[in-house]
Amino acid sequence: MKQNENLILSYIVVIFIVSHKANATTQDDREFLEAHNKARVQAGMTPFTYDQTLADYANKHALSHARDCALKHSDGPYGENLFWGNAAKSLKWSPKDAVYAWMKEQKYYNRKTNTCMPRQKCGHYTQIMWRDTKKIGCAKSNCNGKSTYIVCEYDPAGNYEGLSPFDKHDPFIYSQS
Image (cartoon, rainbow, N blue to C red; front, top):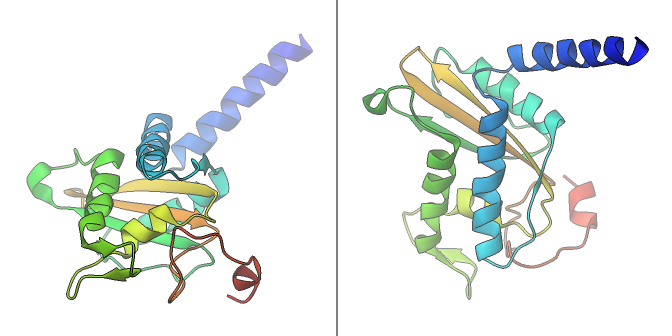
């Protein structure tokens, strides 16, 4: 009897947590993690683990832009990648689509010089590749009911000026941010 009560309570907690996410599902969480880890493993990096605290933080930020669709960073304690998918594809933008868009920046990044080509972006890619990052959490929301807004949080954050994402860094840098 007690075991059944615990099981029912567990289901209620899961339903409560899922119902308070913007529009992401457990399948989305798996897809975010798998897409990130596929890219990392191909680059010789260790895989991430998925963290619900980061996902909750991402969800809060995604919901805060559900009306304006603004790609504005939260300026929080984590690394952060943002994605906005326009209405042309409707609400069918997936976690893989966002991670793929961020990974496309790889072609602009020069690993030998740790630089990005002029007038190009590489920061989404380098955040995904940041060696010291261990955990991610992501969220997806509808924006104005027509497009998709995606946020991924990374802990510890990456993209420290002048440092390569592929190097292991002194943990001291993270305590100074």
